[in-house]
Length: 297
Image (cartoon, rainbow, N blue to C red):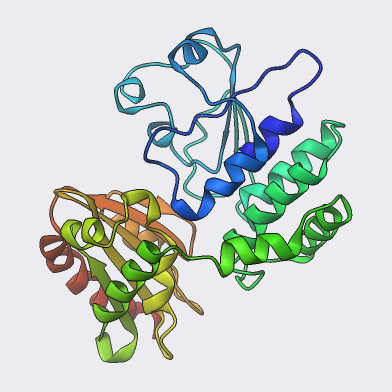
């Protein structure tokens, strides 16, 4: 989003980005500072000629604010929908959905190139950061030759690989570190070692000094255990609402499991939100997950 907005800031176009308060993790604030583009306010949503939505599978998931998301905020204006989620509902007036793409950042790179816009070092760094994080360091199955091609071109354009590696991989705040310690302590194995899950209650997240925006990569803790094919992370970022991150490995796909609980996403990376606390969410989902894994041999 930041890279596309920065690339389009010319030729009479004045884009702004929608980053509602509380939606940005501590780890990623430096990217907003790097982009230095305007944030959308109330008037911007009213006056906009159109919208570009990236990496978002449903209209209800767009960063437009809770009250506005329940209304027809588009109001007959064009929406360009660029995404790589297989569960995308194609809510745009123009939909470019490439499920096989490694990341929305890779698609954003192709979009900017085809738009004949120059890629500055700042844009290159923003897009490279998106590709790097969404592929877990170029390690997921969706990482392809085109992914490396895009990353290579972004490095040529000035992406600061060393600085991004330091900021994204080796610069945790104390609160992020404390939350990670909780996730490790709460990790459990079930299903004969094929299923792993962890959790953090609302109180644990707050006591660690974190917010719901800081929850995401911690799913890699239960996922990292040897032999685990299905990993889940239950986090109560908001009191009474539990977010579930699902990850599959090998032949195991999880988007169907997430769909059973009203969620969606990618084949092997999906999510859902339940209107209950962590304990109740685990009680609802865990038995089904243990049964679900059996279909994969």
